[in-house]
Length: 379
Image: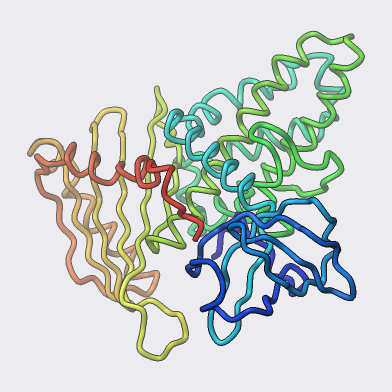
């Protein structure tokens, strides 16, 4: 599974500038550095005169470069030849990325709130006339999909719930890597998008709401449009954070709502891949899965799992011994179900976890992983 997200700079060859001068005759440059280049003379037959740090340089480019224009370039290599990559969109994309991260850090439970409110907001009965204007089938599909993405007793019957969660949510819907960053936070995709995952359906509904708002006939459309925009932003922010986790930490992070008889809980799931195999095929020898569960009656529970090939070990950490006493009789059934899925049990135990809050705090530091916005995290 690869969650698509921003491709920060184009890799097309015509976005490259090949510099005529040797590295030692250029101004001080370092690989990865982004500098401004001013076009002194227009390109003829691919050749242009540019200023790099006030030093004139002749370069070849497949793009038309207009005299007097300024572009941002990244130093791609210095040896054996000097190559610059045009990244005029990189600064705006980096700013967009930071916007998503800010949104995520300031609204860590936005996705959970979307679930708790969404089913009610997309009730055809409550939408009334608006439901028909938005196409009842799409409204019903959104409500049904939201219900299917909440973990419940019914979900236990589906051994592929988690896989379906990722696909249905729309994490993988982008046709091109970076589609999430091509929109301003809160904006929508093409309303004609026919994707039938949750993200695609929300985008279609958002497009129709925008049209209804222009007519001014249905004031309630504005309120729903705001909710849909913030919901899309929440999904996009999770997509961006997961991309960064994949690239820099080898992790995934998911929030899944839990349905209890009288309340809603939350499971925050962290998946960590370690020890890439020696065959060079990109497989991971060990996977660590951490479940941070907020239960209605049992309180906070931490589940730490290690999977290596087909061996699995699992420790459940509870708030006090009474909760452990309640859970332990169910461990045999859990072991049997894992064995039926083809796993060999290494260990399975339930202990009192007095450090649960500490564990949660440590793993929630992902909210601040990229807080140093001055650092070029896209290099």
